[in-house]
Length: 345
Image (cartoon, rainbow, N blue to C red; front, side, top):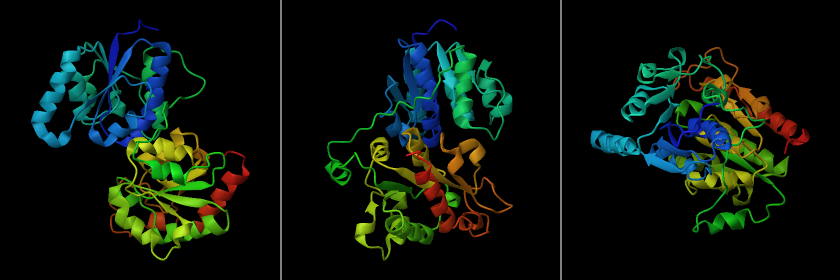
């Protein structure tokens, strides 16, 4: 193992799910290099999850909406730090450019085979090639392998459950933490093609209450409020807790720590739920579970039975979400029964 640097910069601006899956890498680094300061270059959309992460020492936020001026100010802030080592985990042009312009003498990124948009040209050290459809959590671990950092027996996602002072309503709803009788239903995703059907969610909510004696909790951001209203249409108020648009990203670790399990499509909150150690039943159509299954819950995936999946299209190309329609509530109920009977919760 090399000598521990004074500080390192993690470059991973984007998706909440990717940021969450990179957390065990930083935990592993901190275990061997406890004195090394870890800074993380991130965009506002994923900032909240890092605010709950105990091993990051500083966030350097790039507000992309500010345009070139914001990017220039962001780069100046990075260059002032004089990082000796950068880990570029994003594999895109923008992250590669950030890595290069940081001025760090050592810049570790993905191999050409695993990068995009000429990202590999910006870094002067590269991990061994990774398979396109392989688990991203394990892909990120190859950065620690390259640095000679000892492997760990288990992955530590390092998320600290906490609430804002203004979130008393959450403490009231989940007051009895000894008995977990709530199930998180993750409604949304960054891609419309990943959404499950609102009628299916409604049917599942009835089953969770009447067959399993569990109370569903709707999880989603402001963009899923309209979708949630379709799910809730006609449901008794007592059958569900609606948290859509009411919780911050940094509060989700606390919310999921009170759950018995979580259910939903490929999304950032799905990975946060898995990071909190609860079983996650996940739905797959336009994307592949080989690369993105929630860590530790690979046995609970449900794939749409259609020949066009995975298409990796953000919007369904005129096939009316046939992959997600093929995942019917009855199949999900059987998976729930398996989770509850398996002693995994």
